[in-house]
Image 1 (cartoon, rainbow, N blue to C red):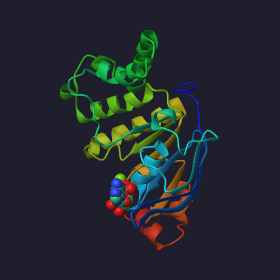
Image 2 (tube, helix red, strand yellow; image 1 turned 90 degrees about the horizontal axis):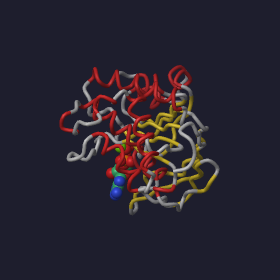
Image 3 (cartoon, rainbow, N blue to C red; image 1 turned 120 degrees about the vertical axis):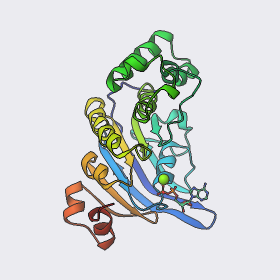
Length: 245
Ligand code: ADP
Ligand code: MG
């Protein structure tokens, strides 16, 4: 992976479309996310949020359109070469490996030198406050600790940008609040571009520089939390952002 941990990549989506068979899931979407920006995608289940993230990460092909990361057209580039790290709601840690090994694994696969791996693992563990957990296995961790390790696995790769797909939805309400604060701190400390998908309006309102409201693969509104909340474009946006979950 290229660049320092503080690198900030602009992400551009140009007329991006996605169909599964005859179903158009993403319908000609244009969006520019500035380097270092924290953008939250919200919208009802099935509106295309995960598909969009997966296309940016390269885990799903686009049907048409272009995706640029840090000015480079990555539309046809392999996921491992896009400089993007994705964090999912299911943590998918390796159960038979301890935390240190879970954090190191991807770097070992990439043939990163041993001392560099050690440095990255220490830095990530410090940022996430999981240093005391490095010798434990996932089965010996709480849900919040596991989610921290999953985020740590993204951090050690020094990505240009982080993509989060509902990372906190499996946690209980109290943990969700504390992890939300952690993620905000992470963004302040690392400064990377972050795209975050959530159902949770509080997460959207408190974490984001800008909110993107999606409906059926179309952007209904893009704006700061305040703009979207105080001046919704239509009843759908008002209902979605305004009404409690
Ligand atoms: P969200 O994350 O907003 O809930 P998704 O991006 O997961 O929505 O899904 C958007 C739409 O695309 C849904 O209707 C879903 O059923 C459909 N879809 C997603 N992945 C596939 C796939 N691999 N094959 C067919 N349809 C899919
Ligand atoms: Mg989804």
